[in-house]
Amino acid sequence: MRSDLQPFADRREAGRELASRLDPYRGGRDVVVLGLPRGGVPVAYEIATALGAPLDVFLVRKLGVPGHAELAMGAIASGGVRVINDDVIAWYGLPRSAIDRVAAEEQEELARREREYRKGQAPLDLRARTVVLVDDGLATGSTMKAAVKAVKTLDPARVVVAVPVGASDTCRALAVEADEVVCAHTPEPFSAVGLWYRDFSQTTDDEVRDLLEKGRLIGSAR
Image (cartoon, rainbow, N blue to C red; front, top):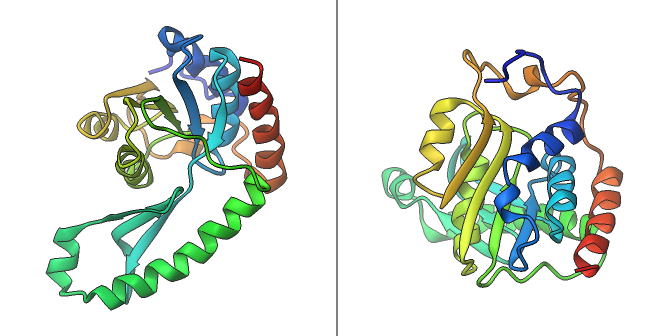
């Protein structure tokens, strides 16, 4: 919990504070920083700057059960990764065709965002790299959990989850999935991520593109 119990000014301030918790990774030539769009990207940019590491986005789209869209039966992510929840699939008796149909719909949106954010730039190669996955906070952690599982299929050496603020139970649960979880603050009661920012306005696509462009310059300078 923050000692002064005050929220962050904005995501950029949160990123700078979180970066101080990741100092052991500073200057590591195998380190890459991935922000979950959109709100995780300003946080990730500050971390990438502090660590001297390249920055990229990692897009995740939930695959909702047909007729129960709020329930995740899996997720798709950057790099053509698909993660399936076999228990949910079995419980609902979902045929492969139903999964493929939902995945195709979500893939269109994921591809659109990839085009918007990367502007033709290829995703970073994560093989044998230390991957720092960043978001602006963790409530239920479902998106981050999917991201961790997806990144692991791309053969990284290590996956580190890093957030400025999160629910303590969620941070503990993610420690089972990732190699390391850095939740800078776990206030009680937690309630919602947005309560821990004075400015929690929506990050725009333009801001994401601008920060990624700057982040690529950080990586090329190494």
